[in-house]
Length: 312
Ligand code: ADP
Image (cartoon, rainbow, N blue to C red; front, side):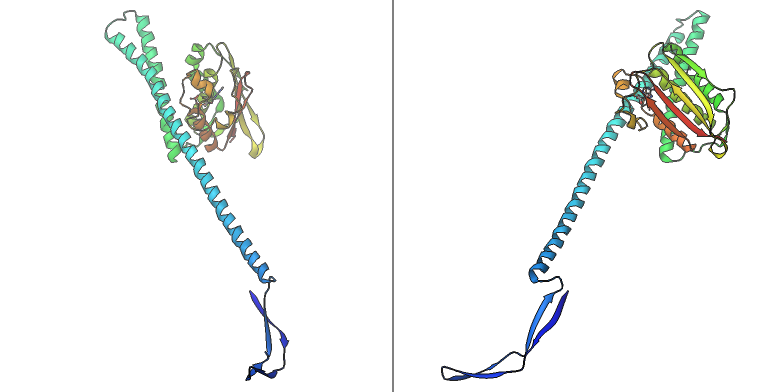
């Protein structure tokens, strides 16, 4: 923005001068016109314009830097996800291979008439049943994960007795607990308020947490399952805590526990069976029931998973 100001007003003055015999008529100016930028002198105006364009250039540079940073972060994330998905495929295949091998071997023995003792036949039947159930659980877990991802899962809304779901989950894990020589200690009240939700989904939450406690416990360890009612009125809720005496979770792994396909270093190194989907599903189901889950762990002395669900 320029401003025009008239600083001087002079009388018209005519003066004749003779230079080299030529009469020269000169006209003195009537007006002196001074133009001044509002910001001050021309140098100041140029400096201001330069600062403006410098600031603009830095802004564009900063934007470019942020964009490059975001591309790097999302590329890393995509690489990590791809690696986790490969691990998941390997983990699922491994999990499917073990029960399939057991079922095939048992089936072959029965077909070849190797087993004659009725007791042995019953044991083979139990083995096939148990491994078949393990396969079904795995398939159900993967299907539930796919459904949750696509947002097409519909949970039932019925009154659920959490004590019954805990009992079901403990019995579903009984073979595991026997195999690992782990004892499950119940510290449960006589009754609990009901929770509104999907019974099967809430049972699978408890089952997952208890089977993790078994998997990551040391042999001969004790798992404690506690439940209690907390709050009252509209804040009333049911709290379930599952505590194990395993090696615990390193603090660096805590923020990743609920990421799909995440498996801890120890779980991978010791080849503890799993796919890294359990806790991700648990969290999604709990949150779909307006609840929340929390993990507390002291490396070396075990972990506690705490689930809180609103009561009816
Ligand atoms: P998975 O058990 O199939 O690996 P999860 O999603 O259930 O997958 O658990 C993710 C990871 O969290 C596990 O690989 C393990 O490192 C860690 N984790 C879960 N529960 C426990 C626990 N009770 N004690 C120690 N680590 C655990």
